[in-house]
Length: 442
Image (cartoon, rainbow, N blue to C red; front, side):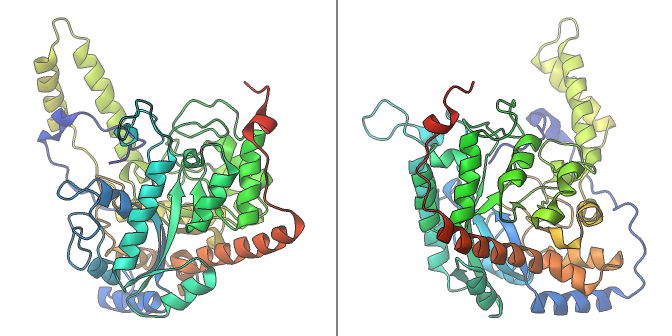
């Protein structure tokens, strides 16, 4: 599975099972649970969820039983993961950006040489393989309908039980510093690109790596401009605050954060600071709140930090060895119950983003099948209605919940297409290179 932003301690800590904690601070609902469920069922039937990020194509690639075999990973029945067609229907999902993630780390085993060549290949081979897996998956099931435009997505969402399916690239390393490659991926169906994954690129700083450029380089800015011209959404999940800020300065179209939450609520680098949230109304962009436990629960983040400190202390004791450290950590875990993230935690992030950026600038990006631990109550793609019930209990209007479910991201798609249509009349495809634009930069 992909590297998470919060490091969970080694397997020695799994001897004590986690226990759920009750959501804190949520007001008591003033209507019956049945009435709330009926309200949400009606709302999501009319406005099905569009989710910004699901890693099912990578789960198929890495499947322990039949890796890369799309046919063997049967989505018509309950899968080993978090996503299948029956659960998508139960979750009232009408649109999905399927992530065609590839690792950014050059030493990842997926980049091992093929055939007799001794040199490592570039990222492009693995990226093309992931696009192929995703397209095979979508083509295999009539319930998954390939779409490339906002109009096509709207049309599919009117067909009950069908999921408009778009592709999202997770990491600009896949373009290998080439605007020509960027255009080729767009032609293959990619409708957003996350500028970085966890590794800083030659042209953009990542949130989980040391900053090198202070944000975007001139070539990075050109990447954003060319994405605007193409009609490819600029995704700012995973990037540093400097890259977020630079992209907002350059982009003429709304951006998204396909799977991020609010840094003011959970202080981790992968989340979005308020200084960026406050700029979204002018840009028109959307933060699609994610369900990654380590990004939504400050209690969990703090627990992990304490556990890591305890592990360091145990390893520094005189005569410490692996056996004594394991014993000490098992005792520590037994005495310090590991928190679980809850639906209430996720709702807190949604409400904070609504408060700072506005109801027009928040969406959902669960990151299902890209995580190994889930939020209590949000274990798979069937559970979106439960989150809306939580928000209804907090007084959310139907209008704001429709915006969260789908209307905001549809507006982004509309505007990205309009900007693209205008820019294509104003300038041709860019032929600028990183050598031309970033020459002399350190």
